[in-house]
Length: 107
Image 1 (cartoon, rainbow, N blue to C red):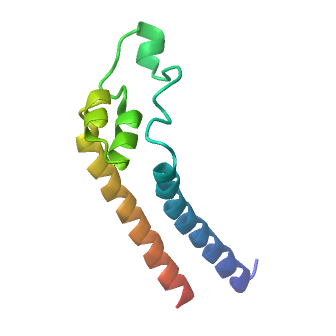
Image 2 (image 1 turned 45 degrees about the horizontal axis):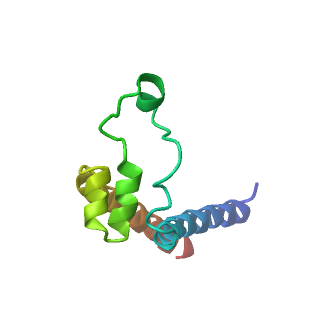
């Protein structure tokens, strides 16, 4: 593989990473807040022991927080108010790193 081909492939992967990091929050905002509210639980704790764990309802809580529905988020899992800012911080770090890698690759 030539140096130019390797650089092109690296730029493509950086574009892909940036694209995914941009699309995921947009998709979560476009989906209705109650999208995950119905259906069978996928938590192993519920499936195996019929007992909720501390993470049960976290996805639903986060989705309602994204849509600024505080009461519903609190109902599904109060820990969503702690986890959501942490997830936003991690996403921001990943995005800024991918953007920095993109800027370095085009320079």
